[in-house]
Image: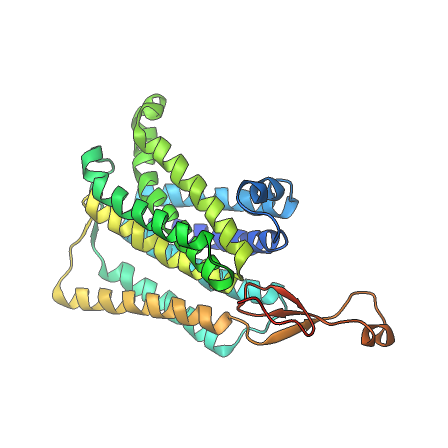
Length: 319
């Protein structure tokens, strides 16, 4: 049932997009907190909690989609979160939506339709023994350790991108585990706590949430969110093929369509993020101040692409 799975995944993508925009705005206001301290602050923020509720609802849609379809169908559809999130973030931050953004959004939707129509995905296994997961565990674990360690000592764009890569890896791995856990719940619900997949899902999901907030805190939505949303399906499909034995049964012509649509998905995602990224320095006037009073006060500015870091006039941005 690829269209049922795709429709549910599209609903999940819309919920993830709204949640990402709200969470990024909440995390960006806590620039002096990190790690556990940041999470404690966010847990007391109504906007962040409301966004998290939306993400949980989106995850429920994703879980049902994975029960109805293959990772190879469901996960690429989640990339459409960018189609919703980047224009929404631009609107909430009073930035215009360009024609380029609209065109790439349409291209992404068309590429997804072609991908689903051309793919005759074999759902593979719902569960697999632990020995079949070791390659995926080592690959994903290596990415998390190496990139996460580098992100801790980075700043600005590098820190945001690094933690976004870690978050995308964790979320993608958790998506593959979700397929197995949903299957276990449907057949042996009371025994799911005896299976390692459940605990790996909780750990991977929790790490993904924390690192995504750190990415949101360090940089704008246009920097952090695309990297996560690109890596999510890439990692999930890799795990699905490697551990769960998913395959695509297609002719040569169909493979050309699939490869072309996949390339459009990657290129369009990057182009949409670049088109949505603000440039230059934007002055933020003080609220409730008259023009004569404002002339005597320093201008508070934000340099786009530097993580939205506020700068007093006359100061150079931190590199």
